[in-house]
Image (cartoon, rainbow, N blue to C red; front, side, top):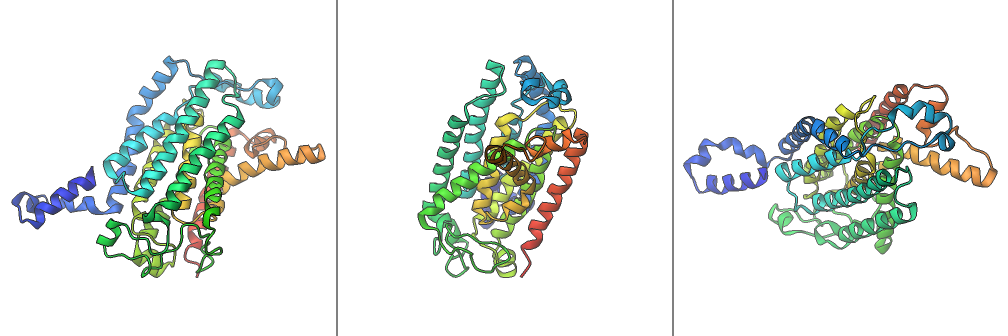
Length: 399
């Protein structure tokens, strides 16, 4: 909406209309930095205002989080017993405020914004069904793992095909109408194939072009990141705090990738003039995360549930693909990677050796069972998330 207002003002200003001269400050609505900042503040404010109402509604609907029994998790049941009945599905607050902020501050038909938003909402819907199933059955299992993985892969497949075949985003020499109007030609500005794989330490892609293999690669990133965030969401505010740092880092990367001067000429990172707009969505996610954390911090009044965690992970994974910083996600999203790898290693070790590596996985539960208080685990993991994000951004200008 803000950009539409700018367009109306710009036409009137060029025509010399008096009102446009009077309201010259509307020129601010053109700038991505301004709209990203407004999106952050707006989503944060909406979360604070709507949060109590959403929580009351969830309580009235009796959608309390089922807690695993002592037979399932042994000592952990004693530590988390007090969480029983805390409303879940709080992810609807995050998704709703992000969507409103993007509609007001962003350009929702920008291809990068559109695909990331659609992945986020689609996985959010899948998570909602999973959460609702848990509540109705009063069982922590929810939708079966096989069904969930099928729908995640399908959503990832649709997004991957869009990114691979859409001309404005898909590769060398591709110029959308808007990009052409801005005077950009991808061949002149070093556009790279969307199927290439790079890393900031190298000036040219590590893999110049995956071709159609990029589609399963993109699916792996989207599904993997979605599940990694889901696994991290086991303590009050843990996943939310890490989401803020990762979304902020990729918001910066998206802005830089949309700037020929900063991104291409100075930092030598993959460039597309349409990418900068993605930072508005990511900063809206930062604001929504901070607003949700207001209620989700220990002791949590609401959980995001799979509604939020699956959606957030999918959005972050898609953003990494769009910015062509997929491998950097391993560092920037280091906490999510730790959580996912701890589960993989635990399962593999138990099946192959009959022994467990950790007291319990995901790894945040291991530290709980080793005597760390829940708040200690959360804050220390937040610190690690900040360090990982800063390390990832630092690598962007290594050469």
